Amino acid sequence: MNLYLLRHAIAAERGSPGIEDDSQRELTSVGAAKMRRIARGMLKLDLKFDLVLSSPYLRTRQTADIVADVFDARDVLRFTDNLIPGAGGEQVVAEINKHYRKRVNILLVGHEPTLSSIISMLVSGDPTLAITMKKGGLCSLTIPVLTYGRCATLEWLMHPSPLALLGGK
Image 1 (cartoon, rainbow, N blue to C red):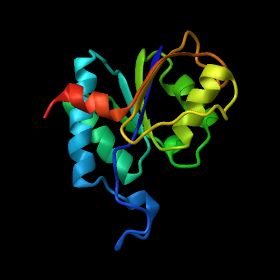
Image 2: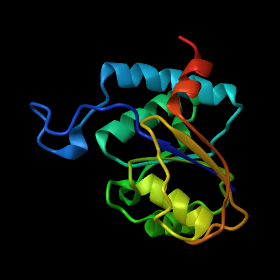
Image 3: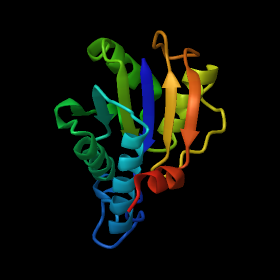
Image 4: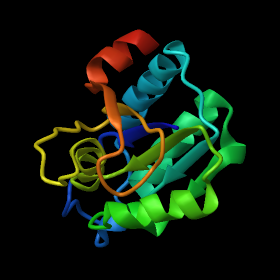
């Protein structure tokens, strides 16, 4: 399995006027535009997804929508509470194993610190390894058999800027 983890793009700040619920923070216009470039950069890397699994929070939903549009992958876009802020990686691993076991190229769209904790656990067996996932950053893991523990190889972790540059204007 190839597991990709994408942090949502730049969103409205916490406590922004008119936004009382963290789940309703949307992407800024700058964040949405950069995410389109990042998604085009991802496409140029010749990535493919047979599942895009996202947190249902507005900013991650918008990020996943952009990727699904660029990849023409709306038919494989799903949402799960197992990727909301504060969710444990164990639940999303269980969900993948239960419902999506046969998928080969999976993209998870989520939040920090959940994503770095998942990467840490799958690569080292310890959820506290220091990993920085910038907004719009992307990680690639290869996994022979997905378990919630040391089971993955870190292939790469990309800062959003090179991805956006690769995607052009």
